[in-house]
Length: 359
Image (tube, rainbow, N blue to C red):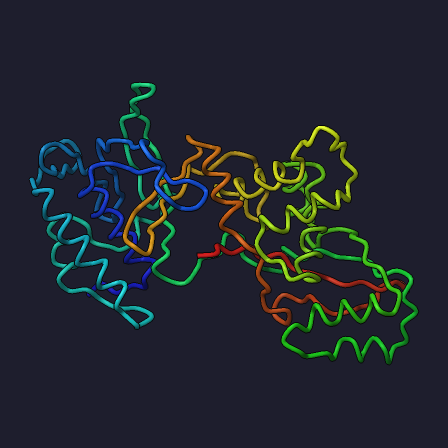
């Protein structure tokens, strides 16, 4: 029996839905369809443990294994199964569940697992016809579903801690203990406030891990500094959406860019960062700047629509990432941040970066 969570079942739903629709809809920054922009789907490729399969679309779905034709299945079946599966995913309250009716159909079309095989970096690969260029690009996607809980874009870890030096605060050991023992719901914000009330300042020094810092510098040499400002604002204001935090930083312009002609320095650099994170950059691994086979995201919406964002349409992809992400507070005890600590006679404070999708 195949069991999976809502996100995993969404991968199968996306496969059925796209084969039923026979076309790929592009999304805008607000996760709505871009009017008049569709890519007819020529075929969908999927790697399974028992081989690579090709779902070619003609008048009816033709399932091809290697070069030999295996099965012909009417498109209507994919539409029906997609609708049935969507309702099952929406209505299920379990963390993981099975859908026997769908499993039977999956096996009949050589689809034997929920997730594409682990050797593949993409969840799904689609060959489309681009009417503008008359090309047939092969596009790789990672599938993100709004049917389950929001997924993370950048996972928290000690790797994503930013270190700040506390200046001008003559805090006694007792005062430090008092501040560190604040355990309110907004304890990190409250601890920072106490330091500021004592005349203290916070100045970014470095990230906890060198690899992450160098990855950021590779994308943009000022990125560590810019992110340190955004993170500090997240922990000290009511803002959490990245769009709002970037706007706030741009208004303050802490890096003193020449904004006389309204260049969007901060927005541009953060968009570059988000795109690189989305397409392969991980804090713990040296980033070469080369994107995975994955070139974008397919978003499974709550209403069942499947929208595509791809590096192939870079502006929409970047706008989507900026408009639909927020900073989130991870576990401070697990990742070791949010307390005043002393090193070589100086006081320091770590803040953590975690980015999650808003929906």
